[in-house]
Each structure stands twice: as structure tokens, then as C-alpha cells.
Image (cartoon, rainbow, N blue to C red):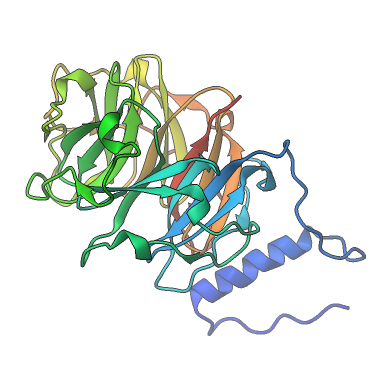
Amino acid sequence: MEIERPDLSQVAPEVVAYIEALEAELAQCPDDQPERAPIPQEPPTTINVISLSHHGRAKRTPRHFYGRQRRAGMGVFDLETTPPDFPAHLALADEEGYLLLVSNHGRAFRLPVTALVETPVRAAGSPALGSLSLRENEQIAGILPADGGKYLVMVSQRGWVQRVRDGYLGKSLINGMSFHNVKDGGLITAVCWSNGDGDLFIATRQGKGIRFRESQASERGGLGLRVELGDEVAAVTAVYPHSRVFMITHDGKGTVRQMETFAANKAPGAGGKAVMKTEKLIGALTVNDGDDLFIISQLGKIIRFPADDVPAKEGAVQGVNCMALRNDEVTAVTIAKGS
């Protein structure tokens, strides 16, 4: 039986977007079959997709329940939040391992993956940060699987780079230990793991970037990128001369930038060069053949697709559609390494 669609002209845009997304999902379901649980498209794995909201609600779901789609698809609903809260971070980690959470004050916390509630793909999640004793106005700036490299790299909004050896972040870490002075370049806005033998690539919200030898960044901290007024650092990732970096904007546009055509600076601390045409870059990650990308939106939709679907470019471009958005925007991205 068909039901006449009511007039939605007076309904809030975010509600209309939610209704349209539901309609798109229903259109893909046969009318004569009941709705069924998602069928895994890969062998069962202990790797979990972890989503965390701005206000600290989190959930984890085994990765194999997220089916691959084509680039620019609608995605599926994942973490349910209530405005003004929204999904803010994505990570992948083994359920038997630990997460490393870094706050915007530069404090580090280790948390067992199993401390987060395991749920189906679509779920509200549970409060997850109560045990961390965050300070007033302190927020999580990044989530990484613990023990993911030899150095934790933190970059502040004004381009100050700090490196921390992995030995300080292991099982002996005292939760809440501080590794950054906010007087140096402001709050932390980007983190990544590195092996210490390559380069660092830093990108800002307005699509400016720099690449330089990581060994030139002092462990005590120093200026990595001179950030223009009105801009701030959005992402950092470890690279090599042959690396490719995926970048995604708030409106779902993505590109892969080849580092061999983005010359490294002789030293850190210079102004950025154009790496992507955007006013709101969300994230940047080093990608390899066979990797999958996971992108989550403000309304809690998540999409998984092969990174190889995004064409590599030599210069600064606007990017191609990576996720279909309707009155929505991308908030976070993470990567699943290919086997």
C-alpha cells in the first residue's frame, strides 16, 4: 500500500535529510521480504569500528558487518546521537587491544577496546569518557589504536609539532599524562602514529599543507607549519616520497594526492602550499593498494569503500564525490589496511 508523502516544506532541514535517507534505504528493500540483519561481506574479524561523538558517546562494531559500497554511496546509519551532539571520531582497533585517546590539551589516555559497548551497526552507544576525568573545555582530539608506531605525533591548531616516543605511552602510561603545553601553538587538533624514518605531511582546514623530514621535528616540540590567520591544522599523517594521501572535505569531496609530486620542504616551519581546493578539510590519511576508507557524517551515516576508487592526482583539485550527503556533512575518516 502506498502512503501519500506529507508536505515537508515547514520541517527542519536536518529532519528532512533524515526522512530522505530512510526513504532511500527502504527503496532498496523488496516489498515482500522482512528487513534482515546485514550479512557480513568478509570473514569474521576481531577488528572493530569505533565511533565516538563530540560529547563522548561511543560504540564498537565488528568491521565485517560494514559492507563495502561504491564511492559516493549513501552509507548506512551508525552511531545515533541527538543534536547538538554528533559523531566526531572514527578508529579501527582489535577488540583484544587498547585505544590511545589524545585530548586537545595534549593529554594521553589508554583505554581497553572492550571498555566500549559492542553494538550492532546502528546503535546509540554509551557514555565512554567518564573514567578519563577530562578537564573543563577539554575534548578528545584523536583516537588511535595503541602501540601503532614508534612515535605519537601531535600537531596544534597553530602548527606546533610534538613527538612522543611509544615507550612513554605503553602499559605504564599514567592516564591523563600531559605531553603538550597549550601555550605552544594552542590546542592539539591532529594526531597520528609514525615510525620516525620518513616525512610528516600536515594539512590545514583551508587546504594548505607542508611536507618535511620527521627527523627535523624536535621531540621537545617546534613549529612545523606557519598557519595563516583564520585557518588551523586539520590533519597530520606519516608519509614517504612514494606515498599517497587521501583527503576528505566536509561536503564529501575526496582526492588522493601523490607525495612524489608534492615537494618536501628543506625544513619545517614554512608556510603551507595548496594541497586541495577547499575551505573545510576534515582529514588526511596515508593510503595503500587494497585499503578501505570509512567515513562518518554529522547525521551518523557511515560508508565503507575501497580507497582505490579515488583517483590519484598530482595537483590541488576539488576532489570527487565520496559520500552522498543531504543537509549533512562529513565529520571523520579512518582507514582499514588491506591484507
